[in-house]
Amino acid sequence: MPNNPFTQAGSSSTITRPPSGAERTGDTVFRGIAYACAGLIVLLVIAILWQLGREAAPAMAEHGLGFWYGTTWDVNKEQFGVLPEIWGTLYSSLLALLLGGIFGIAIAIFLTQDFIHHRLAVVFRTIVELLAAIPSVVYGLWGIYVLIPLIRPAADWLHEQLGWFPLFGTSMSGPGLAPAALVLAIMILPTVAAISVDAFRRIPYKVKEAAYGMGTTKWEAILKVMLPTASSGILAALVLGFGRALGETMALAMLIGNANQISWSLFAPANTLASLLASNFPEAGAVEVQALMYAALVLLLITFIVNVVGLAVQQYTMRKFEGKQ
Amino acid sequence: MNAAATPDVSNTSDVVAARYQPEGPTVIDCDVNKIFYGEFLAVRDSVVPFEKNKITAFIGPSGCGKSTVLRSLNRMNDLIPVFRFEGSVMYHGQDIYANSVDPVVVRRYIGMVFQQPNPFSMSIYDNVAFGLRLNKFKGDYDAKVQTALERAALWKEVKDKLKNSGLSLSGGQQQRLCIARAIATEPDVLLMDEPCSALDPIATRQVEDLMLELRQRFTVGLVTHNMQQATRVGDTTAFFSVDISKRGRTGYLVEMGPTAQVFEDPKQDLTKEYVRGEFS
Image (cartoon, rainbow over all chains, first blue to last red; front, side, top):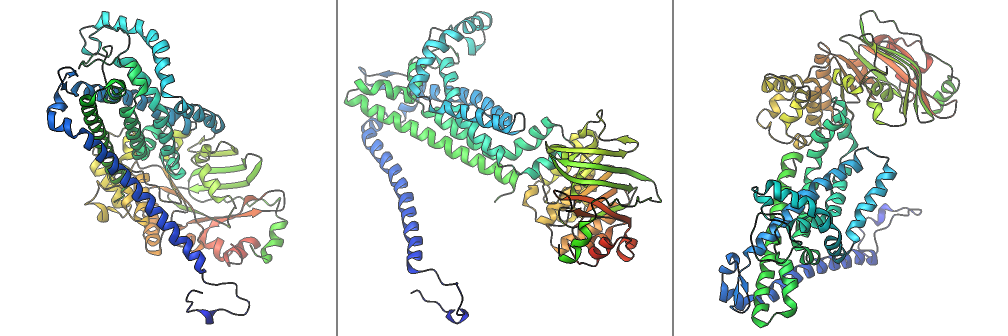
């Protein structure tokens, strides 16, 4: 029996008693498990980094920082550089973030701001979230067989009419940045939409009342009050979506064209780090594997930086708008 | 509600309060016939005139519909889809429930302060300037913001941190910020729905002093759960009660008159019991 200094406080009919030893043990055990799990995650990340670093070490010693800005990937000459892949990764992800972000936030506004009945909103939300359940390879196939033929006429027209403009500088030969970015945008849409919906839902009713009480129209309430209030949650949605776009592999390997070049053109084939890894690993020799490990490390670092910067921006907006320290 | 009040309440289903005839000019003449939430009859037969530059206080037990009536005056209840208003609210000769009237316009002239402080998640300055920007005010924003904050008795506390978030303030400061936000555009009428219920006594005193100040420029409608507050600041008091004799709980106006008369010489037994503190 645990020590109870208040035994005199109890009467003959009292029901109060201190928690038993077993009840206390439950707390301790749960805390132990929680600490262990948290520690395990940290260990896992360290293990991955260490393994990658160990296998990439020869390539890192060989190519050094030149690997970051080298533009050729030639196994025979043992020349490895990933600048085109870094460019392709960031370019395609940013395009996807732009499209997916705009549509994702628009969907969140549509679903939460009384545009449709809330039961219908649940149906729409489920459909949007189902997009996340479609396998990446299916997106890739859909991109090849549906999307590319679909956008080709528009791409050709844009190139013919506005070919002087860097974004439309080349004609579309098939796989390239545009179909890859479009598919990526659809893939990150459920992430952005679902988290933004939650951000809007979290806004207390009293904020909505305050906005309408000031005499705002619906759009003024949404743009001037709801969006700023939800901004930190929306930023979190965008960071997660961007992270997903950076690491997406299969669909991009099928759609981006795997060409080592740096081009502003939306219709030119390009390459990303993840798709480089996926396409080259199966047939890579020992030297190339080392270079690929280095490339994986680069990708990991980029994702890490993006997440940290995103988190910092989110913290900043929270402090600025919500006054949280 | 204790047993003593129950007999009175049980046979009041057809009681309609005597119409209060104010002496001065009125700004709002509220004539509620029926207010429904879906099938539920929330308030019936309540005529409440609001005199210019006076504070009209609503008192009554929980669920008597005093907030519902107040919120009907600037069509805030329109946010609730099942809300239905029967009657009229004449404001400068125009029924604000007429089909041609846009609720957005009503709310720009009739401002509101809510029970819970609800500043926007933006800076203190932007909170106060919100209404100015909304109304496309062209002129000296800094001066208007300062005036509003001074009138809300908040300027001294925040003048060095106008860029900080409105949500970083304490509860009482947040409520005064909301008042500053509401009065910055100098609306005609200010509705206050239990503005002190979330505040400590010191902040309450400040807000009450503020109401007496505001009365000189605005017409104020005040819902309060606190009878002392009504006696301290109310010029006119409307006592609402709840009628449980029929299905549902329907609120209605029992008595309205000058505050001193309602508290010292109530005409209705129910009012007498309520102001004596026999039920709440």
